[in-house]
Amino acid sequence: MDHLFSTKIGTELEPAIHFLSANEVVAIPTETVYGLAANALSENAVLKIFEAKNRPHFNPLIVHIKDWKEASNYAETIPALLSTLAENFCPGPITFLVPKKDCIPDLVTAGSPYVALRVPNHPLCLSLLQQLPFPLAAPSANPFGYVSPVTAAHVLQGLNGKIPYILDGGTCSIGLESTIVSVDQHKVVVHRVGGISVEAIAACINDSVVLQTHNEQAPTTAGQLKSHYATHTPLIIGDPALLFKEHAAKKIGIIAFTNTYEALQGAQVWTLSSQHNLSAAAANLFRALREADAYGLDLIIAERFPDQDLGRAINDRLHRAQALFK
Ligand code: TXA
Ligand code: MG
Image (cartoon, rainbow, N blue to C red; front, top):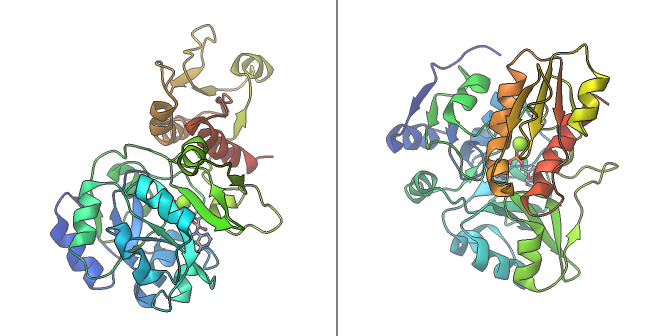
């Protein structure tokens, strides 16, 4: 696409308020990943998100609100289980699918009667939302299919010239997208694992949850498309020591949890948390994937992470990055 704008990066809210009020698209920081935001109540503004991102129109967008108290302005009803979760986790990395009110354009929900609502936990983003008379529709601020951005520089790499302004709120503290939930037959259903763990949700409602994250016949959310979050460099998941030997002729990068794999000479290693902390590893994942992708490698080998807490979301994103090359 042509370069329409000279994209500026700044920490000031005023340009963001100015462009968003003029129905333009602005990249905004959140605690999960950067979002590509526009007035959620304006179909014209929302169309520009799809254009800038090269995103298919059948993928619905999350609507960001400044306070959970606002949810009833956009949702027809809110199941009690979701209110309980919202009380505990808002603001925070969790998104609620609820029946939408008419003020939310069909383009935002891709024709679905449900809208995805989230209260981001980022001070600059919240100040912005407080100063705007409308909520912000925003997908992650990356070209469709690529690794989500966790710094303003990452946003610029993917969207330079396509948007007028990037609001710089530093590095995202969670580093993985929000967990998406709904309620069906009195059970909480998790549609995408993310920044709030399944364990934390189950503990909060004192019940098990239903995981519905791999519905490949009928992907209902973009996070369920196979080629999502993908690096350009082929990525495989498994035991780095074994795979390194198998691919001996290749230039190899390794995404590891705590191990530094010093014995694997010639391999470039990204150790995500030497302290064995899954939240810290999650916060480092997308930066590491981007660095590895820019390193001129033939192959990225990623360890399988422990399938608990944020390890689940890390494995999910690695799995999707891998799927493209199967
Ligand atoms: O952490 C996040 O959720 C980030 C930040 C920017 O808030 N946003 C994000 O947006 O990850 P995106 O578009 O990359 O992923 C949002 C997911 C998609 O899988 C989308 O299909 C799903 O939410 N979604 C949005 N509205 C939906 C709806 N009405 N019904 C079903 N899924 C929906
Ligand atoms: Mg995304």
